[in-house]
Image 1 (cartoon, one colour):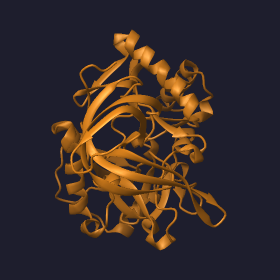
Image 2 (cartoon, rainbow, N blue to C red; image 1 turned 90 degrees about the horizontal axis):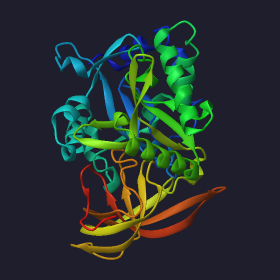
Image 3 (tube, rainbow, N blue to C red; image 1 turned 60 degrees about the horizontal axis):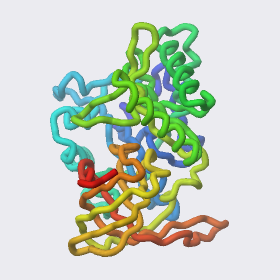
Image 4 (cartoon, rainbow, N blue to C red; image 1 turned 90 degrees about the vertical axis):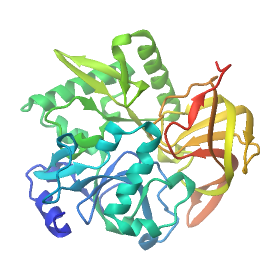
Amino acid sequence: MPEPQEAVAALSRHAGWRDFFVPSAQAAEFRDATYYLRRDGTLVFSEGYYHQAEKPAPERKLISHIVYVPLRGGDAPPEYTLKTVFGQRYENITKAIMATEPLDRFYPLQFQRYLELDPAQASVPRPVYARYKAMVPVAELLGAFPTRHSLRAILSRADRDPAAESIRAVTSQTARLLGIPEDRFGITGSLSLGCYSDPHDLDFVIHGSAAEVREMVDFMYSLTDREEKRRVFEFGKFWPIRFWDYHGADRFMVCPFFSYLDPAEAPLRDFDCEELGEVEFGARIADALHNAFNPTILGVEETDSRGPGAGDFSRIVLYHGGERGDWREGARVRGKGTRCLIRTYRQEGEKRLEREKFTAVVINNLAQVFPAEGGA
């Protein structure tokens, strides 16, 4: 891997760098689904809204995934994992795992790569919800690629760049389809890093209230339920809120992420989590208001649980982004996870005040929840 200073300096010399990158001092608070540049040149992807804001700055960690690492001389990863980011060759270390391994192995195997790349991760205490994530020191982050900022940078080139014009057209088309203003859209994934010359997957980040997002998700369900040509099957599963869209002769996969317009609406923006024990469980989903966000939070009823942590619980928390929108109200589900006591907080001046306390089954991996017989 290139020396860290060399890797970062090479990125910053690229002509498009300043259009996309926002230094840490100017970046807004940490949000889900955003890329951050670390001092060593790696690019990490934030998960969720809680990033230890209650801790002193030198102790804070960004809960994230390490995705892109500078390509080292002598390395020969599969070609499909390589990406040129602002003129520099990078490897997407998650891509080969996702292409070759079963769903429930994605995150554990990715975490093993994190430990190889950053051995210091092994000594960082991890709560259950971050078991397979990188805990990156906030002090090591140089800046971000905010999703709305990156999309604006791409769209500003639409009059002279055919790829940017295609993204502009699909953005406008999707906004009309969902009935929301275009300025509520951002972009994540490699496009947010300026890699948009051959866009096939559009990882839109759509901002709204939980109620607005619920309406959009219900519309997406109706779209993929009704039109077979819109349905997306990838990595061995059906994604009910991803859909194919068309612009001229081109087909684009719209992969929506949703972001709270007001981060204060995020139920787990600030919280503590006490582990009570492993469980196998069954439940019926009674409230799916937050089912399309990361973390995915499902209110449940008619619950049962077995195992060391057995007891009542009122929610299922899927603390990963891989099942956003998968679970609908009325569905009966079964699965396994960790029963936890969760306390959420609000900030009033310098005080961190408890807002809510509840028990939940927390799930940190894919393919741990399944439809149960007799479900709706």
